[in-house]
Amino acid sequence: MEIILSESIDGLGEIGEIVKVKPGYARNYLLPKGLAVVADQGNVKEFEHQKRQLERKALKIAKTSEALKAKIEAVSCVFELRAGEEGKLFGSVTSADLAAKLADADIDIDRKKIQLDEPIKTLGEQTVAVKLPGTVVAEIKVSVVAAE
Image (cartoon, rainbow, N blue to C red; front, top):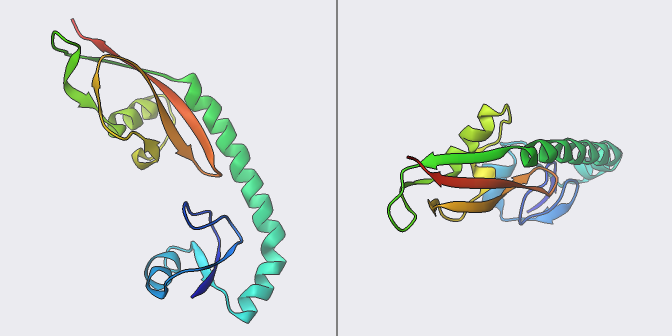
């Protein structure tokens, strides 16, 4: 089934591309969420007309993502947690903890956008990537120190 993407989707394509997907994926996920429209003759003509608007939307998203990236990178996330003798934590720092810390700094980020492969379980400093709309990636500096 051919569809026209109204939003950028990782692994599928960017705004405005005509892509071929399985019918179930389009019918059950992309179309109900408004992420795409069916690429029939009428929609293709309408899309050509709206292409300039989508390009402006993509530029606006990229601009706001860059501003958000600067805000995120200015925040320092310091966690003070109990740790054992060898620097291992009693517990861990998860993406939900990072999202809460960013929320305290008035930055609303979905925890699913924080690219943390495994929870942080050791003391020290780490850099964690945050995926933002418009293919922008911000980096958070996370410091984990031992609580006294």
